[in-house]
Length: 540
Image 1 (cartoon, rainbow, N blue to C red):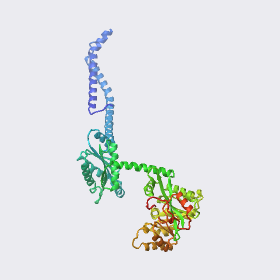
Image 2: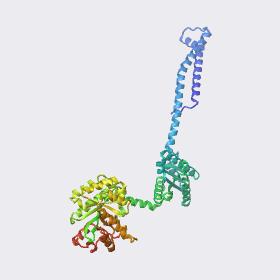
Image 3: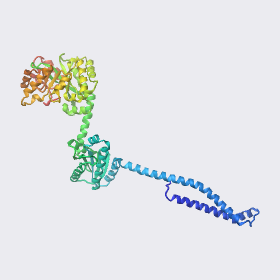
Image 4: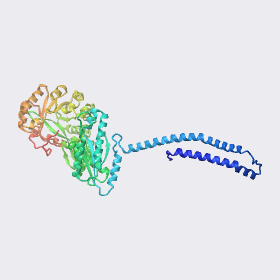
């Protein structure tokens, strides 16, 4: 592509003058010499005494016509040249701006992720050079954004970017904004002690009050550090290591820094594999129902079971709920797992005596799902299992999440004959209010009141039992492990008991064997050594 310069106009003028001079010389040469030679060569008559004035008039006329022929197009060409010069200047400016945007973050002016990685690659290509990558994530940026608005949030990001750039320039560091409120920096340094001091200084600089917000408002950051060649030898590997270190620092406490640790990666991979296997187990309905006995008081006659979850992992053995239920909840798989447990539990319960009930725990997310009553009823109908034999247990925490949705769901369940129990009563926010506002048939006194011989424990149990009687509700006590507690509950009028005193959680086959050899109107589970979990840990 031809590039037009300021010298282009001068060159065009020189060309015009040269052309006119050529026309003048050629026309003069023709009139004074060439015309006579040509006519003589052709044998034509030629008047050599033609007036000189006429000859010069011809020369000037020829030159003038040539000048006119050049001026008009020349003006047009000059205008075109000017337009092209202007367009070329705009194109160069746009190219420069495009190059800048391709290399820099549009908001802060720092390098973007692509250029940061390219620059880091060049650094890592130098043999025997030690380099540390720092991922810097702001801790309390979202509240600032929400409180003061996005415009102020952008000013804060720009101010932090200036601080990082100043900090990095004094240490031969390269700084970039990776996106959002996350920045990165690589430093030619390989000493953990020095990097620790650098990180502490950087946290102090970031934590200084913000000038972009009125008042003494500040922000903090969390830093993850990856070191080359110890942690990784590539830019992407170092960023990944620093990122993992940053997230671990977040978990340990914000406004801090953390170095990458190789064993943490192994733990993360193992956790990811565990999650994948768990999701597969839920999808294939491999989570087993276990059953913990519920007995009537004071006669301690078996009346039903609470459904609990167990997972037989192919390598780790039988997994207790506390090892996988939080993961199931985080993955959003609690509804699928709960409905699967109910179907598998009903398959066992259909062979048990007809008065045996099943209790199923329902989570916050399930209560907020308007299809919960229909899905539960559909499972019961398909199995031909009486609605009256199912009890749904909800916690106060689940109710607080979305009280209107909980009210609709519980009323719909009760209308179909499914009873509702308030689990872990006494540990929530406003238990009495929920008892008066929702369709609750039974309350379950939390196990914490049973196990600890605290001062006034008996009075607390008596008060809860009196409350339930006053509201004409049934009561189940959880975590009953001693005869003393069972006696206190019986005297106080507690309707049901549940705990290791009466039996630990069992598989369906174990329940079948126990029912086959144990009369239901005896102490039953107290009189027989039951197969159970190896650990005496509470399950929920």
